[in-house]
Length: 320
Image (cartoon, one colour):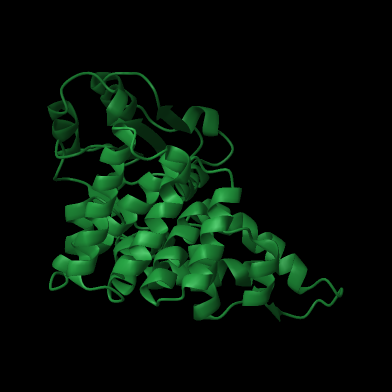
């Protein structure tokens, strides 16, 4: 299930014995807090976390004990740091303790039955926009879908940052002291939220694809003045154009399929497909080859690292 599906499932109150959580960051943190809220005032006893060490046997042993003055006890374990045989967990899940909720991270393919999988990476753009809308309402503001998409992109789809920026934007929208619900606007976002590096890379490739060279050069200057090293910037641009090429070549496949093949999140593929529509497959192939040629030129001393990115931008403009 997705994060939103998990929230609906959790609100119903009929919980399962074991959950496998896939992903990291903001959504995982929110899920962990939800489970911790189940144990009441004795979280030091009833919320047990094996974060950086431990064994599978110790996790299973902890699951055999009862909660103290609470309906539930939650045991959280990260399989990355656990030693021992995962079959012990499989055996436990055949007859789990009804007062225990076992929450597992990074299980991989070791556990596939007896648990509910929550995929925090599988959040399409519409799901993220829905979360942004709900977060705005919590802070007494509204936001349209288009503006929500702009905020997500400007924050590089970092939901923790989006969460923090919404607080600021909501306060700004009500700066006149009014208690009425006010909209968060694109103008407010442009004024208060600095664009992420990823946001500028998307904007740059869009500008080049639309042959808006003036805007492309302006964004390039913003990237340079942000303090990005040429090597890192070249790497970001190459990774992005390569993603566009893959999306172009795999256009008949679903967003989820492409995301799984590329090891990225679905919303990243959705955005990449939109940008890829501005280019032909041949142009994207030539652009990727330009990065290879540039890398060879730098290695052989034919080009300096300092002027490599600007040279690339001009050459890409000619191809696009």
